[in-house]
Image (cartoon, rainbow, N blue to C red):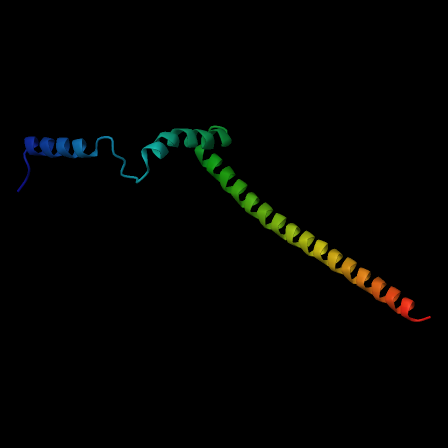
Length: 107
């Protein structure tokens, strides 16, 4: 059973009314409004080429992740160095105090 031209137009009109103003992508209205801006930024980064812009953004993300890992490691190393220096200083103070006490006890 085939549809008549009027039935097809009626169905198309009803579907269009139901979908009017709605995005099937699941983005909020605010996010949909920002999509042209985001795509413009990608295009600018790629010097007018979307594909090149996406690749540059991907490379920038990889570099950022590597930089974050390195900075975390450097921060941990510096923290351990500071703790070791504090511990060493505390041991030196205790050792010096013990030696002073022993000298004070021995005539």
